[in-house]
Amino acid sequence: MRSLSVKLDHTQIHPLLETATVAARLAGQKALEEIRYTKTEIKNNNEIVTNTDRVCQDLIIRRIKENYPDHGFLAEEGPGGGIFKQSPRGADNLWWVIDPIDGTNNYSHGNLCFTVSIAVVYEGRPVVGVIFEPATESMYTAAYGMEAQLNYSHIQVNNEQINPFASFAVDSHFGPEHAQGIMDIMKRTRFRTLGSTALHLSYVARGSFIGCLAIETKLWDIAAGSLIIQSAGGKITDLNNQELLPINLENYTGQKFRLLASNAVCHDQLSEIFKV
Ligand code: IPD
Ligand code: CA
Ligand code: CA
Image 1 (cartoon, rainbow, N blue to C red):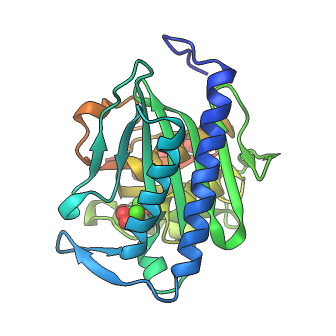
Image 2: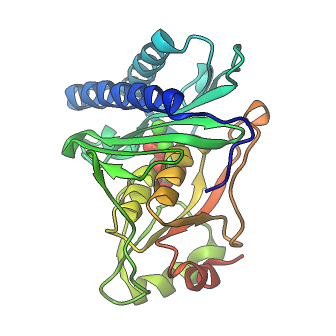
């Protein structure tokens, strides 16, 4: 594991992780309560958002600010369809990166595959990551120097090569340049798509999928999942097999990431299939 230039010790990491899990659980429960009567609208002409996305995001940020009023925030649902961003004010220089509902399309149709994703980012990389799937009460967690867990039990990636019984997940947004690779992996594995990139990353981390591909993700889709995958022994890169992070949060305005995540053992082989 890389070392941090200023050491964040366990006395700081534990409360951050605790705050993230509490906030994710609160938001997830709220989302479940509202799933049958939430109101859907279109933002930025082509994206779905529900009023519950905003309610959950407010709930998460308010909860975190009770403990960390001076930390920075980067979250998906900002004013006028933009992002929500507040730079850190204190000496900590920590950012909370939040997707209140990952899988809004599913959510807005009453499909229970959706998650809450919260990361704490330090020096451009996640040091805490939490993904909560409320429908199954599954809390995936990781923190700097600690193992990945699902509901407090250790998880790790599987060790399967590409094979016809292995599951590989592909997100639903991709361009023609990726079609050949996707056709290839569809023929060689059991192909899956659950509608939440954060859930795909969690499934790789728990050993249920050998890997996943996502072409149109934003930082809040992947910040928590990337730490959870790496802490579970997996690998996450761009499509040229290069590291995705660190990222300068001050400059981030919603640029997209194209990512390949895997159990690490088949990463190079997968990367050959999807390289651009
Ligand atoms: C979406 C999901 C989906 C991915 C989209 C994301 P949202 O997040 O992660 O899997 O295909 O690119 O926008 O919009 O439901 O938070
Ligand atoms: Ca998302
Ligand atoms: Ca979202």
